[in-house]
Image 1 (cartoon, rainbow, N blue to C red):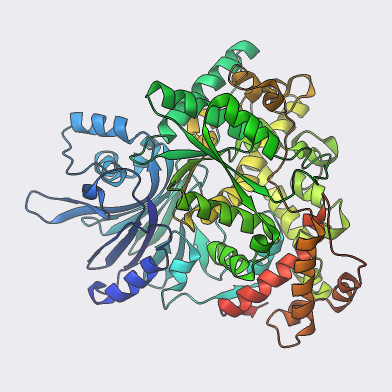
Image 2 (cartoon, rainbow, N blue to C red; image 1 turned 120 degrees about the vertical axis):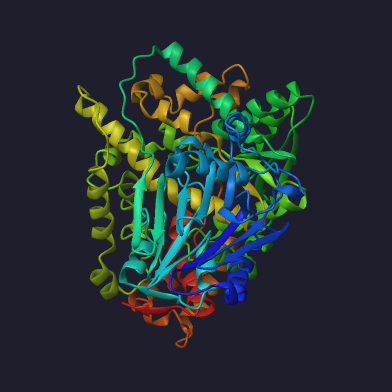
Length: 623
């Protein structure tokens, strides 16, 4: 539904400030290419960019409810999908609410009028929204439970500026692209703190939270957290329950007035979703389109890695698509496309911050561009399945799962190229020592552990398994959900992740680890739940992470660009580079290639992105 932005100032009339609010919304035009809307009155201005997935022309936003006298009572702007909107509309209509359109935003607004600030507890799905209560002169910002949809803000002396992405905030004159020490730590620690932003003064509404902004100040309320409950179901009942909950989640995520596609890698997560979606579509007399990404020559020259990528996706995606019966499209990318500097800059702009993931970011961005070109504006994706079902190897490898930091950080520190943090080995050593990226991550880990709910009678091993799952869902997943949202919405495609469904997450979170990994097979619980839908080779395929380029030609591209930047003493990133590390990197015999090349070139990728970011965003470093 797209992109939202707004401004509340309790000391001025914002009516003359329409150009500023429109500029903020225009910065989000990629999220909503199908239309725009705004509402400005008194101390509040709300804006919206629309991606037409549900509803007719009567579903425009911001949504407004007026009194019988014709004056506005409350206004709401929404990004995302309320997956239980049909049920809520029926319930609210029975209570006397009258609807003028058929969009999710109007349903959410009437839910607010009915249940007040407790209304987010009644919403299901992926959403970020803002409600301006005209009567109370009060703003309420709300974010979905797992943080699928982004929502950031910047407090001013007399109010707040908010938007779906930082670029909307930066379009406001009060927000400057200043990055301090904590901002740099967020870039490099690879363990983002919920609620933090990279630019000074910018924050994010926490997942599962509401934020109230009034003239006297702001308040925050947690309306959802992972519940800890004893699990008493047998394995058979657990498998059946997972099947039912996942089927229901897929059904609600398929609701749209446009075709919803499916991302299909041939792994268990995407294959399960695609199979359930195809089954649902056939029952409705319709088909399903599926899509995968591949690199030229990737399958033929694939080099396996024991913990990250054991097999190439293409053969399994094709097998799954044929078995399930989808209309499948493979989006094939060559090195020239992946190495295009303009696309790398576009990947940076989509996230408003540099990333060390290089070709993974670029290929994902090109993938969604291709989907949009194929007429797909909403797509099912398997995000968060690994977090829910303990699919990551570090979740059960004692060397990482029992470490004194985040398990994924422990894994990174086992490799020289990422020992100080993925992507930061070329950053000045003195600066790294002063900022202490490692301690920043470790302290965040210790703080996060204090949040984990407990169940009486759990053994130490069960307790630790719960902690690891909690950390994965609340500290690892948000980074990847945010990246996926930004990359998809950069081309006006809404990512829909059924594995983030509240009921499914709550249930599986409390399933003991031994039931999720029977006989040592990762995600055996999920595999058992869809065993009748998939061919054996796909059903039992070991986890293989999102593909990354292995060929030396791409590594040479990265290296040549890095050489040019390192030789330019006037480059914006020059003061941040470590001279000795740069000399060693440039003196290597060959560019990184093979299964682990993405880690080895991550620091070069990060330097290139940093250089573009510092220049293009006019970043002012204050460290």
